[in-house]
Image (cartoon, rainbow, N blue to C red):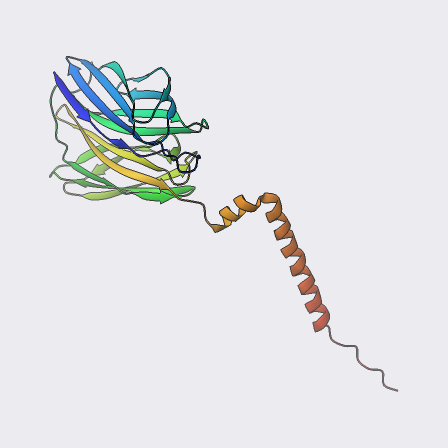
Length: 276
């Protein structure tokens, strides 16, 4: 029997209700018996607002399972879900379990929180890859950079995946990378804001996986992504509305046209006098 307990703080969910924050903390316990993985996920509300419509999705290397919807999770309360997964056919080693927790606030605005927990199957494996995922601030879109270093004196072929909450979208989140002995490299991901609220901060992860001599290895690089407020022009548009901005633009266009017409009149040469 092997078990691992993972305690990530899921940083997310600033509610549209002024001053309210939903912050969910998860505890993931993985127990492997033979070729079966038993996972227990406990979610605790550490914020100051009740979370509604909570649903937990857990994805193992070969399958995924989704819990029934929990109507509400009050502040300070916890809820647990247990699922089992088959690991038959996998090589021994270390794998990631991906946990996504969806929920809403009192206005039914959707949020999600992401956590990664390691699965040790048959034998442990320490990866010889080091990854550093930067922290980024974005408005509509931005870039996350993953720095990767090969710590061994042999070539590595990596499968790299960027994992984000549902409110964010990543272009080409799955890629591969070949590293020569001792080499360093950088992988950049473009991330777009699909439905995240300004002021919210989300946990994101990059997994780096490879196999050697029939053993599976996984390295994990955590990071955060914060949604910044819109720029001055976008804020003005939000405050005044598109119609008023259109009128302002039209007024500027008409004013410019009048200005140039007056300049033409002023610059027009006078007619030559008539000599008798």
